[in-house]
Image (tube, rainbow, N blue to C red; front, top):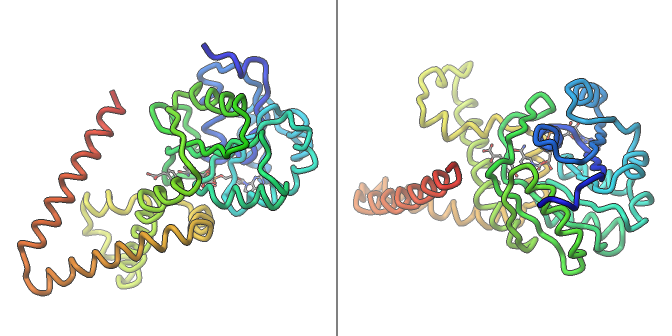
Length: 298
Ligand SMILES: NC(=O)C1=CN([C@@H]2O[C@H](COP(=O)(O)OP(=O)(O)OC[C@H]3O[C@@H](n4cnc5c(N)ncnc54)[C@H](O)[C@@H]3O)[C@@H](O)[C@H]2O)C=CC1
Ligand SMILES: O=C(O)C(=O)Cc1ccc(O)cc1
């Protein structure tokens, strides 16, 4: 039974893919929350209002904070410190809960600490492991979070009832909640999300620079499509993520470069046994990942 959200107002700052999808999901599932939105782009807020994703658009962050019981930050991660600083005077009543959807959690914690001088009990950071290469309000999808995980990284002073409310917010749109420390989150995501995006951007850029008028892409097949879909993701969003999670990404990138050097050596020396060993281990791991995906889809 969902009870903690009844009659409350959620204020969503940033009505792009994730913010607008959350608004759309809350609406399509008739979650009893009033939805107030804010975005720097007036085109975006007009669309969100016109599509009925939000009930009302706040004129500024001050108004949004005054109206909202729960504020969800859904802006690129490097925009967070500025938004927090603008909201700070209006959040200090202690009654408004604050959460976010950012792909990096260490930088959010650092921003909150720098703006508020402490980690307030009404802060429960979050990260939906759901999205896609499209961005903006036009890409909003009410089913985006269904059967997907949302990682919450509450800190040691996060209020229990605040954690329960944010848990219920995500469960109400069909998501499964996982709890994790900030450090573990940033390491895991560096490996499973940030590194793959870096490799995809880098591979596509390498080939694009070597190919006159992108001619080579005419001959690319499904493997190239699957490997590089995420290179179509938003450059600003990923610029922000890499600069915010540089340490953990560098660690896993160095590990990967070392492994790739091994693959290169095996190829150069025609060491087929080593190549087969690597491919067999990787296939086993990828088959396991496919089984996780199948279980989740059931
Ligand atoms: N795109 C994805 O697949 C996922 C993204 N995330 C995280 O969600 C957050 C939002 O990402 P998306 O929705 O994909 O981005 P997006 O680019 O679709 O939307 C961001 C929105 O924030 C607005 N915005 C930017 N600066 C602002 C500011 N200072 N004040 C108010 N609005 C501002 C923009 O106008 C835009 O509408 C990012 O932190 C990202 O790391 C998390 C999970 C998945
Ligand atoms: O496009 C994809 O497959 C993604 O990996 C989406 C995504 C992007 C960023 C996140 O922090 C979480 C999910």
